[in-house]
Length: 210
Ligand SMILES: [Zn+2]
Ligand SMILES: [Zn+2]
Image (cartoon, rainbow, N blue to C red; front, side, top):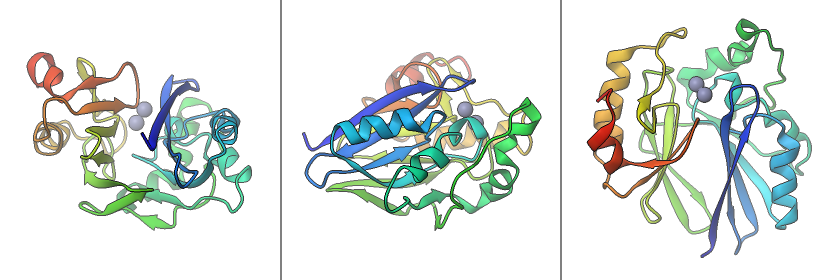
């Protein structure tokens, strides 16, 4: 298979970072480079992949703390993609100071993500799905051809994203899950921001928050 997905659990919030690599074009995308960017970069280098882009599901600091290191170690530095509704959060270091951290958020986002936008890695297409509630500009990346949804902090195994942080909204999050997650096929893998992966079918059946 041309597309390989590596996952890393990094940083103070045990955030899942992903590296999706295309072995044909030797390019990769770092999705939520959470922390310790050198670890993500080394994994790419070992496989001969160039990190071509950084995609952020949302701008919380624990999802982008490794972006600066990934960018610094890549030539050319990969453009960063973020939904504009999370720029306010990106500009305050993703809220890091609230938690007692100082981070370098890395290169300023230059790709404005929009609901319905198509993104590509090699021959694999990803659809951007706007799923606000945890943050206003939260998006998910859905690759229908491989049945994978990178869903960030929208939904977890047996849980959902917290909505008590600035500009979070519970009703909005539930609506996002119903409209943007539960409408996908049951066997869709949910590669989320924290904890083990799950599937749409499993959460539809047993998630106590839904
Ligand atoms: Zn978050
Ligand atoms: Zn998180």
